[in-house]
Structure formats: structure tokens, C-alpha cells
Image (cartoon, helix red, strand yellow):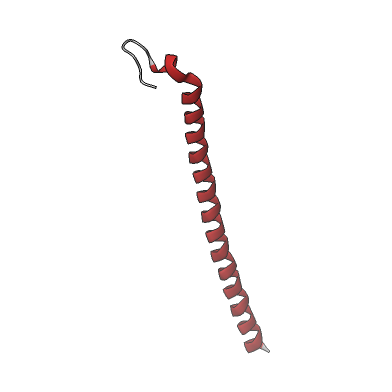
Length: 66
């Protein structure tokens, strides 16, 4: 649909424009949510790895003491 002279965009297809805006916003929100979840999972793996190293050092200290 092309706008004739003097017609505004809101007079042409307001529901379609609104649907497009909502769809674009939802895509952006999903991208943000997935990005945050990915970053949280990566930091969780690093934390578990560090915890494993701490337990390993603790086991070495116990074996040296005994």
C-alpha cells in the first residue's frame, strides 16, 4: 500500500504497523533474554570449575597433613 498525497501513515494501516512494532519489540526482548541466559550459564560453568579446583586443593592439603 502506498500513501497518496496528504495521507498519513496512521491512516493507511495502523493495525499492521502496530503488529510490526510489537513483533520487533518481542524479537528484541527474546534476544536480550537469550543473551542473559547464555551469559549466566557461562559464568555458572566458570564457578563450578573454580569450585572443583578448590576441592582439589583442599584434598591435596588433607593428604599432606595426614
